[in-house]
Image 1 (cartoon, rainbow, N blue to C red):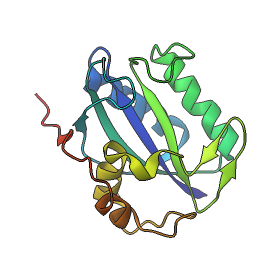
Image 2: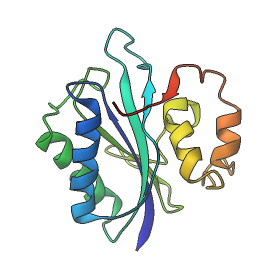
Image 3: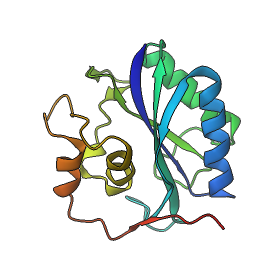
Image 4: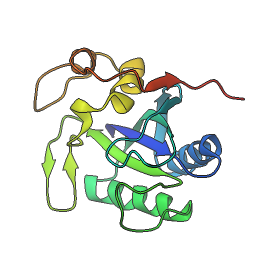
Length: 161
């Protein structure tokens, strides 16, 4: 079993329900452990779209990285995400943040997730559940990575209605 960390986000429809459904589908194939709080966050890149709800979950799996990516893309598709358009609004987005301490660099998949170290919307929930997790490339803990991110003001803990 390998410990993985997944980042989930939604900015279309009922964002909280989308995240809940995605977590449920993930739990059918992976052993889900820690799950962060949900955070209401500003979009990055294409800022002319609705705000996101984001969370991070820790899970254990026997799937290899590319099989895990296939699973994530299948869940996205099942929940209504259309292919293409990485900066477009979407009902669900599932990113593989870490896969144990492995580094993967292929045309289809890069692990650790390449934007992770600059993204407060990933680091804030990740630091909530795994502050001492070490980035296998930089050697820095998640807590240290979060301390070095300057733009955190667009990330707010979500209080369910």
